[in-house]
Every structure is written in C-alpha cells, then in structure tokens.
Image: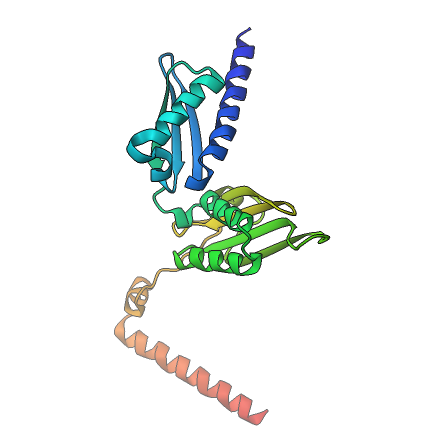
Length: 235
C-alpha cells in the first residue's frame, strides 16, 4: 500500500531529525530538513556554528554521512550545512543555549536575565523565556519560572507570528524544559495601527481651511482655553 510508504518515510525522517539534533547539539541547530528525491536524500542542517558540523577538512560531516548510511540504510545521503543569519533572534538557538548552560551547572536566574537582555538588545519587540522542572538541588520541587520583556502575543491567530523554540536540559537532578518566544523586529500584528506624522498645514489644506479661517480657528482655540482656565479658577 502506498499509504504505508508515506508513513514509513515520515517516521524515518523524524528519526533522522532526532538523531542529528543530538549529534550536532553543540553546533546549536535551528532547523533540520529531510528532502527525499529518487536519486539522493538531501539533509539540510541550519546551525549557528557550521564549523562544528563540518569539522577539520570535512571529517565531521563525512562521519555523519557514514553513520546515516549504516543506521538508517540511506543509499546516497547528502548533508548541506546552512548558517543561521542571526542566531540571537532565533528562538530555537537561544533555547538550546539556555539548556546547555543549565546542563553545565550555570545558575538559572543570571542565565535567563543575560539571555533576555541579549535578545532585547538585538532589537526584538518582545521576548519571553520559560523554564519548567527541578531548578534547585536534591529534594527541590518542580516549578515554573519565567522572564519577559516587551510585547508578546499569547492567544489567537497572531501567535503564529511569534518565533518559538523548545529544548530539554538533562541536569543532575532531572530534566528541565526550556521554552523561548521571540517577536522579531519586522513582525507586524494584525491589530497594529500606525498614525502618520502629517504637518498641520497639510491637514488644514485637505479640510479646505484658508489662511483667514486658520487664524479664526486659532482664536477660537485660545478663547476656549482661557474660558476653561477661568472656570477652574472659580472652582
């Protein structure tokens, strides 16, 4: 059945992504795509540190190619490494950075604050970092902590415009989930309203107000302001 072939390709692609995500974890992968063609299986690795994937004289990428052939029985895999344009604005890269920092024993409070400050300094409109798990030593209870700044959407269709990243930190006391949400500088939400800065002369010209009428409007505004000040004084 052709349906079984589709299911087999999908499960195999997912297994390849999970395997490569662990193998190139230190390179901070943002996205992994598996593209199948009749001749080759093309795998695109989008990472923040391409040198760690390629290795010296391509030794690392050759080893990954051989491992994919043996483990997943792929006849002709081709790995393509693509650098992330701006790792600071990539939610998945930042989530992995926080997870690796927690695994290395860094304190979660300063780690989250530094990461948030670095992301906001890059010009983002909003950012939120959430961690869940045992954040203390032995005997600590699971809890959720978060830091945030700027503007963030939490519900509705505009949530699709928010870049989201997820990673898992495997610490000595248990696993900790890391979620990062970033609103990019160029993101425009549907409810955004912009008011153009138009000179007053242009507005009056569109309304058809002449120079004499303009002076009359100014006098009326002044009189209204003076009357209002007099009423306040009487009160």
